[in-house]
Amino acid sequence: MHQTSPHLDGEYAAFGKVIEGMDVVNEIALTPTTWGDRPKVAMVMESVTVDTLGVDYPEPKTLNK
Image 1 (cartoon, helix red, strand yellow):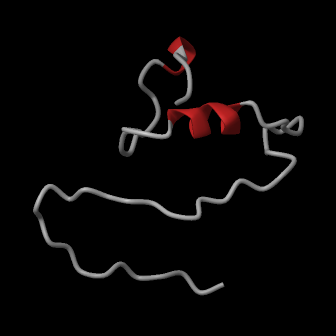
Image 2: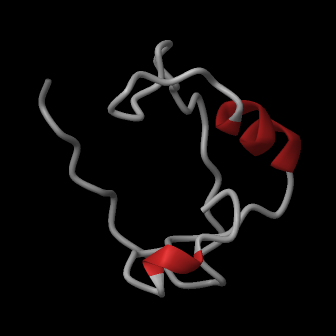
């Protein structure tokens, strides 16, 4: 969530936390959207870093496109 949304009342899933780059989150939030709240210009994450806190996980399965 970019802003407080009390109408959701905890009825959504949250995964992770932005620890740097909040300026990018703010820029994405200002992106013009359609009536269905889809961005008019596609938003694509070019990279993501995950701190597993020392736990080793197997390589994730990828989706075929």
